[in-house]
Length: 132
Image (cartoon, rainbow, N blue to C red; front, side, top):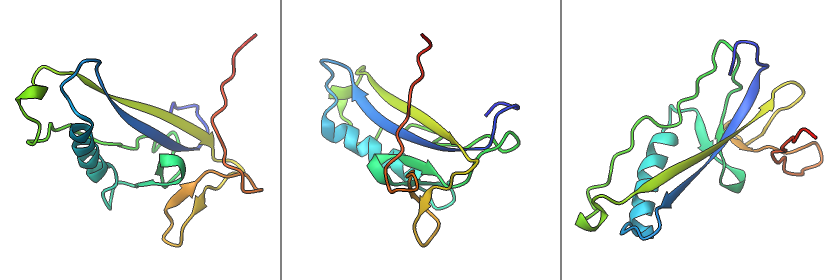
């Protein structure tokens, strides 16, 4: 968050995408995804996986505490064989934030964020503003 930003809750989606014609299999990507999940969902990370496959950061961020590390390293799994050498993939992250004023995410009994819902139980989705 920038210095002049309001407090906000954040969530991310993560998709692993192999390049067209790549020798990387869906099983190879699943091994990598499991390794990344291990980092993201580590007990002290502050992240959990909730509604809709989103990763939710459990605390609101403010301009003083504006960093929430998602993961730090990407390690190619040893199970990937020679058929993956020189092959490409992308880790596509999409972040969303919601201003914390007058909003509290739904949590489980342990304080983990389950999702973003309005007062009537409807899931909150990202809106895009396109200037006319």
